[in-house]
Length: 396
Image: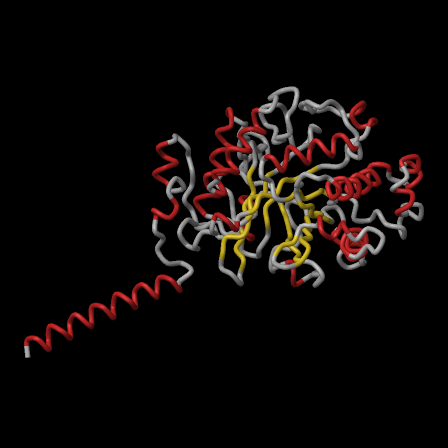
């Protein structure tokens, strides 16, 4: 009898052990094995003197290193008149360039791929109404003719779009590997663009120019694929005007994987879980203050995306009830801490903002700037730091 009882308890213990192991494997919020993420845990960051928030950590299983992606915000508005008229916190080390300049585009492609950047997302968020209905001369032919940029009605928007086309064609023809490219549309100053069809017209333009272009089929190979479709980001301004539902319920285009973007989800309380900092409606954040929020893919239950900046600007003015002070670069400390949080949460996609804006606006001065392209102030310091952090993020 004792032998039977002993055998029974041994079998029972074995069954419980197997059941526990299987349960942990099937549970997306199961306990992690810290040894699997050596170097990416709180004790590691504390030892390095980094201040990293663990809000939301451990709720979702981290994305495997080999599946991780890095996207960098890229600007294509630079032209001669802009460099002469606007104020800049710095200028590029390669000199003042037009965004459609082949040498600058080639150099950027080499630098970004050498840093192991997977894709850039080009900012088209301000030109949603730049179409032939609003601007009859804003044709593809005029946009692609350097002499005709001015007659399109908006030389700035024409440059944004012309330079993007040049990027697709130049990077696509280079022998070296180059990053993929995605477009970020937007209607921050015109919410009606969703209802009046302007946003759809712009999405159609992206599809016709870059995805289904019979004359230039190679462009589709250079367009960034995300979840099996071309990635189309849509910026709705900061704060966003859709705050009570997933914006995909308001506008979507099944030809693309659409992801909506707004800024400072950390300060938009209706868009985030205050305890975990999870983005409630799936928004990706352009930038955050303090511990970053993160979006979750509701199908895979994986942390999907998190923004990373080298510095962030203040909210309001000292004395205001909602005042939040700015945080400068601090010799790279903020950049390192934001990357560390991305590793702790284990997001699939790190959205780095930004590469080459340079204009004073969102970027107040040298210390409170975000650009990473080698420049006249910091040289290649932050570019080298970008390379280091991407290696850690992808565990290479």
